[in-house]
Amino acid sequence: MSQTRADRLTWTRNDALVAVGAAAVDLTGFAFDTQFEGAPLEVTAGALVVAAALSLVARRRYPVVTLAVVLALGVVVNLTATVSPHFGLAPAVALYSVAVARRPAVVAAAALLTAPLNSLGQGGLPFEPGFGMLANAAATVLIVVTGILVKRWQRETEANRVLLADRAVAEERRRIARELHDIVAHHITTMQLMAGGARANLAHDPEAAREALVTLEGSGRLALSEMRQLLDVLRAGEEPETAPPAPQPGAGDLDRIVTESRLAGMETEFTVRGPVRPLPPTVGLTVFRVVQEALTNARKHAGDTRARVRLTYRPDEVTVEVSDDGPGSGSGAGPTPARPPGRGGYGLIGMRERVALQGGTLEAAPRDAGGFRVAARLPVAPGAGAPEGEEARR
Image 1 (cartoon, rainbow, N blue to C red):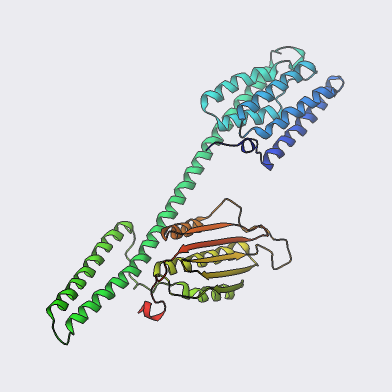
Image 2: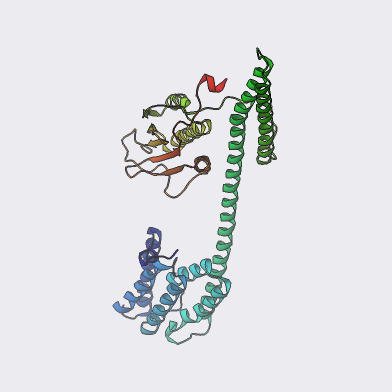
């Protein structure tokens, strides 16, 4: 995807802080250096020092160009003003940015050019031999080595983060497989038992009806066997479950989750809109898990806050929204996002997997007024669903 000009020129607050800090340090050092040498403070040279440091705002997107600008302005300052041998903060930051962002060949070329260009004109000579040149070369090597080590550490950290995220997704998928197994196996087993009982208790014995019931029973048994074989692949490596499976929760159990949230100390509102109707078990379970995870995150990250749960039934879909007011909302502090934008923990990853499995969409982001909002939209065909409550759990 091509970047616009505005995207290419974007810089962060941290970039600005680094540039301003480097400008302050280098300008202070330049002022003390000229006074120590007994030369007058030149305003033009000082402005060039500040300009070289301010160019660091583009170091993340254009590290090589930034280094070239810093070195060029530094050479002009060294040749037009009286400065002693030194290695400024601006060229150090620019060279470090190149070492972190570019391949080894570019880094090596940048290092070979930085040491002599940074020394050019310092000490009143084109190249002052001795300690000044050696110190600049040593500083260049140290900066490059530091950048390479940091780059390697960042790659390892990113690889570990991706590995943990993939592991969380795999664990959530196995959990989904267990729950889908329980739901589908329940209905298929019920179908099998009902067909077998009907065949065994027929008051009369029409041959056609008997053969139909036998076929129904065999189909149910075969479907259950194939489904177990498929889900056993997804559940490979898990420890065997010794406890009997519990009934799966659904949208009708949201009152229990909201009550638990209130008992945990968080004021929670729960509203239902639209005509309530039975949902397919997998959709009801997804709604329940989204609300459960969102309220858990609100208690964990938002602290003393207020949460709202809104369940809306529409003709062809069901939506659920969980929002909170952010930390400190109950104590009069200003609302702030409970979680930083653009980031998601493993709980959000699991929710996205669940909703995507049902063909829906999930939105999770900080609210403009403070706090966090999680909204899921799940398609439900008109007339689809199964009776919830005791009949579905029996």
